[in-house]
Amino acid sequence: FFLGLQMDYDLMQRRREIDRDLKSIRPRAA
Image (cartoon, rainbow, N blue to C red; front, side, top):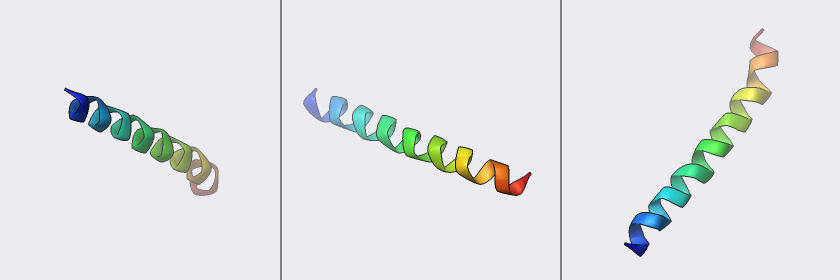
């Protein structure tokens, strides 16, 4: 159970970092 929560947390953190990267990259691409 704890491992599942840890994986979900890691996925959320990774998704947050990816969103931040996309937002920073998008203006340059446009």
